[in-house]
Length: 331
Image (cartoon, rainbow, N blue to C red; front, top):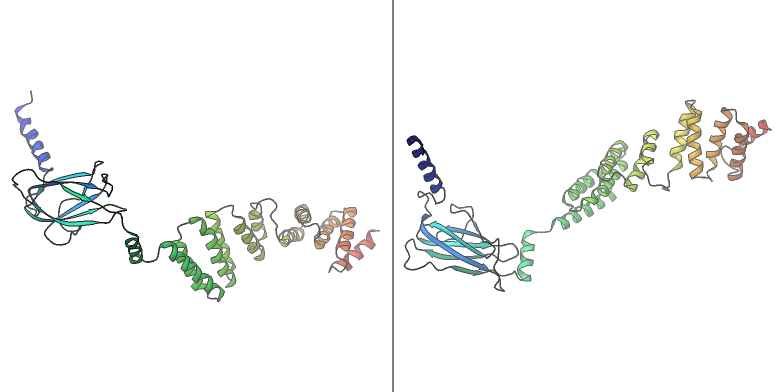
């Protein structure tokens, strides 16, 4: 048996629980009336999840105005509410994919006889209604993105690079297919490059790679820009990520090899020239550079073979005279 002092506490909790289930009587719409109803579609099937909003008065239903919380129909399309004040009420019924239904209904707090249910049929919108709604909403995000990107392309062609970038950014913010973002970043990088800002172009391409790390188009452009900026070593790290068989500008490997040669790193230079020749066996100048490495390493036979190959491939090469002079000395 509970102590006497505990009983008032239990009684108070029961009162609070009961009070939470009914409206606050100080509210203008609160009373003792009730409503119930059934929502169906045009085929007579119950609609689950329809929202019913009730507001006191004869004006249009404003969901933001003071009133009871919106109701939701159950799996049988039914709904019910207690605690409504006497008088006219507006009722708004909404369900995605259906036309909103709004009307008026009277509530009696002390009716004679049972409360009649409010039975409503929701209808699908007509094609004209759908088109009108779309027109009211304006262009879709996809249409806005397309317009912005087309504008950006036109501005880029006109040499208005800053404006083009702004339009590309706008288009990218509206593009629903995120897989298109790397291509847009490449276009932005192109605007920087044409503006003479190679470093900004490189940074933008790296942003594209954050989204698609193995994108061959982005990697190829980045490699070329890094090489053009004299950042051959960094370019090589991205070259390694390109798909096997991708055609690489041989100037990149040649520049890396020449740099290694000038620093006295003959093995590193030989490795670069070997890779260039493997991928570009008809590139005459590469044989000359490799011959210089062989000569520095004291390997005259392969040097002689490379100098001879140079003259076979390009007798008028800028290195032809030097090659002939070296060959005379190597006899």
